[in-house]
Every structure is written in structure tokens, then in C-alpha cells.
Image (cartoon, rainbow over all chains, first blue to last red; front, side, top):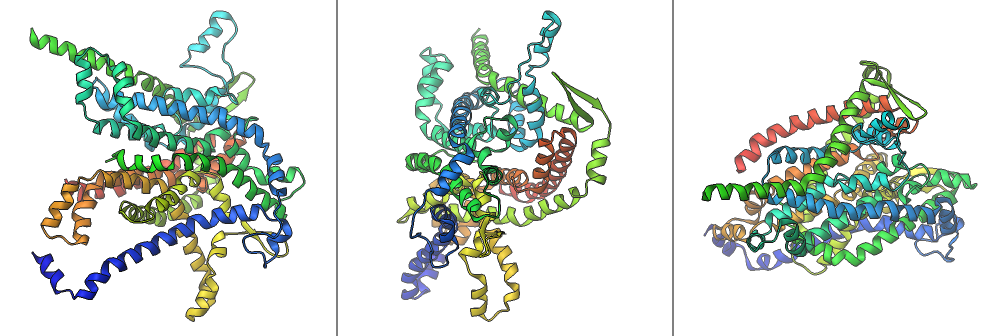
Length: 320
Length: 298
């Protein structure tokens, strides 16, 4: 009542202009934020295509008069791009896929069943989200350098006289193992997203399947998973992106087969190894080119998944 | 008889539940609980390497004493970390909430703007953003200068001259603008979580508030905000972890430098002390929020 009274008292002109003003205001905020986001990317691309002299030339703003691929060539060589790409794909991306799969299984178990110790597991899940990965990276690295499961492998030393404790650092195993057990890179939050989704999914269909004699693993594969593409896409995109950008774990686990993120992080030093010192403009430009080469593959993947991802975010239903 | 059968079904189901989470339990023990416990051990020990073996000797409070009293940078770095947190945290929450509130509305170009704002999720967590935001430009002499791209984007000095303000204060504006830029780049995931939370609020709530005659402002404070309270806790937790473990955080980066020279014990002690301080401060901040906001909304 009050509101309608208020509305009537407002004169006609403001009544009509208010929504227009509001959308204008909205547009300004969006444009400002988009400017902040897009500008650095364009800057990066534009300067990676410039020669050193064009970069300093104040008359060249965005589009250089002569395009050059010199920076890309230099960065490609310095980053050891081919091998770095292979390790990113072989270590990180496979690990992301494994994580997407195993986190779903764990979250389904937590969301659908009651079992003793479930509360404790939920507390552990919160801890897994909250405890920074840096806390456990050192013990993990030491453990991976002399692989052992709770002292079991050490026993082989007593039995056979020779210890079977392989060093799995710098191999795919140290990326795959945690992901296989759904405690990989930021698994906590991924399990949480899945958990929220399964929690909101109607139970009836699965109960009907149970009555019809389908065991839960089969119900999970044939009924729950096909209807949860929304959650799967959300988690997949996040996991792939986080693995692609992962620096902290990769820098400790690898010593030669560096993934892209690690070799990009040391690109200025790597460039100085081939004679382009930091301070030289070509070094800056080379780094820009490296950034472009690093970003473009993941951007292409994102552009393909973008529409589905955006829709998934709407429907995944995280309520905290 | 019937009851017994029912209990049997429950037991069977709970066994299936355990089957689903069994890998997770194993993984937690192997790759979370035990590493965490051994990092507690490392905090009080000295670690050295012999071929094929790691030697851990108990040294008591040595490492902690070193970090607290001998390391010249630690206290300073902690203060820096908290001052970054003090302004970034509220700003990130506000920016991401505003973005989410705008992006859930239906308007032309929504998909485009959403695509752009989610782009930060894809790039921000990585190495790239550090280069792009910090490591930029060089002056005409060719000497590399660490400037921010912000200076390129907005010419603060000329704006100040137009407004008739002294140009000496442009430095402060630069710092503020720089922070805003970092904040926007770091609020991608938060926006995403907020959008997902906003979509989960039932439409009936808004219909009721419309019928009751609430203004937009009242609708936000009495419907949207309380309904978001739980996701707010999640987003806050995530933001706290992100801010204190970012690559730009000085304590974390100095601990990483120590790690790479295989100084494992002192870096572990440093991280433990840091994150314990962080944990205590966050708990102190969370308790009043829980008491005065969450409880009341429920």
C-alpha cells in the first residue's frame, strides 16, 4: 500500500526515467569493470606483436606498423614450450580429469548415505578447504621423493634386504595419486560443489532404482551422473583452469619436466640465459609473448565451454 | 521382524556409502592428515638429507625462535599480509556481490559481460596476472621500470590537473587504483559462487516481499542478504585462504624461497606460525558475525 502510494506521488517523468537511469548506471559499472579486465589482455597481445623500437615509439599506440613474431620465437625457445606443454597436458590435465571423476564419487557418498563417522568426514572436508596447500607441500614432497605408504614399503627393506621406495618426483604419479583419491588440487571446494548439487537433486528416482534392485554404484553411474551435467561442467572447468595455472604444487613436484606455468614464472631468468637480460625491452616483450602463448590455449577451451559453463553456474545451486 | 529387515537395509546402505567414500578416507589419511602431522613434527626438528634417507632430528623450539626473533623480515611481512587483507577482503566481497547482483539480471549483452567477468577466473589464479599487473613498461632509456599497467590505463596526473588538485597526491591515487584493479581481478570465483547462490533463492520470497510492499533496498537487506548468509561464509572462507596464500603474499613467497634452497624446517615453522596467527584473527572476526548476524537471520 505504502509503496503504491509512494509511486503515485512520484511525478511521471521520473517514473519513466528511473529504469533508464538505472540501466545506464549498470552499463557504466559493467563497462568500467570490463575495461579493467580486457585492457591488460589487449595490452599483452598488442605488445607481444611489437618490435622493441615500436614498443618505445609513442606514435604507435595499439596496432604496430610491422607485426613481428620475434618475441614469440624467443619465448617459445626460452620456455621450452613443446616439452612444457607436454607436461602440462600429461601431468596437470589428466590429473584434472581424474579429480573431476573421483570428487563426484566422494561427494555422492557424502550427500546420499548415512554411515558412522560421516560428521567427522564433513569436518575433514571443511579442513581440506581451509588448510592452505602450502602447509602440507613439504611433507608431501619428502614423501614422494621416497615413496612410502604409512611405513609399509619400508618394511620391504627388512624383508628383502633392499628397500622398494621409488622416487616419484618429476613423474606423472605425484600428480595423479592425490587426484585419484580425490584430495588433489583444491579438491575440497570441488567436492563441496558436487555435494551441494547432489543434495538438491530429487531423491525419488534413485530410491525407485533401489527398489527395482539396482545397487547404488550402478544407480550412481546410470541415474545420478547423467542428470548432473551441470555440476560436472562447473567442476570440470574449475579443475582444468586451476590445474592449468597451478604453480605451487608443480614447482615442488617437478625438477626437469616443468609444466607451462612454472616455466612461464621463470621466463625472465630463462630469457637471460639466451642473452636477453631483464631490463632489455626484448625481455619484457618476450614475457608478454609467453603470457599470450600460455593464456590462448585455455581461452580457446573456455570459449568452447563458455555458454554451457555460464548456464551451469545458474543451475548448480550452491547455497553454502 | 519387519523392523529388523529395515535395519538391515539401512546397514546395507551405510556400507554402500562407506564404499563411495573409502578412497576419500584413504586419500585424506595419506595425503592430508599424515603430511599435516609430519609438518608439525618438522616445525620442531631439523631436516637433513642423506642418500636414500631423510634424517629428522628433534631440536625443540629452535625453528620457532629463529622465525620470531632472528628473521628480520617475518614480523614486517605478517603486518604487510594483514594490511593487504584489511582492505582487499571487504572490497572483494562487495565487488563480487555487486557484480553477481548485476549479472543475474536479465538485460541485453548479459552473456558477453558474464563471459568477460568469468575470464578473470581463468587467468587470475595464475602466473600471468602477476606479470600483467606488476611487471610492465619500461621508460624511454630502455631501463626496465617496475610500473603497473594501471598508469597506462588512466592518466591520473592529467585528471588531477583538470580538477585543479595538486599533482603530488597522484601517488596515492595510483596505489588506490592499483588495489582496485587487483581486487577486480581477484573476485572472479567469488562472483561465480554468489551468482550460483542468488539463483538458488526461491522466487516466492521476492513475490511475497513485493506483495508486502518492500522497496528494492528493503528487499535486498531482508530477503537477498539473509538468504545469502551461508554462501557469504563460504565465499569469505575461500577469500581468506586465497588472500593469505597468494603468490604475492610476502610470508608465503619467502617461505617458498627457503623451501627451494631445501630449508624445510624453518619454512614450515614460518608457515605454521603465520597461518596460526591468521586462524586466530579469522576466528575472532567470525565469532561476532556468527553471533549477531547468522543467529538472528535464522
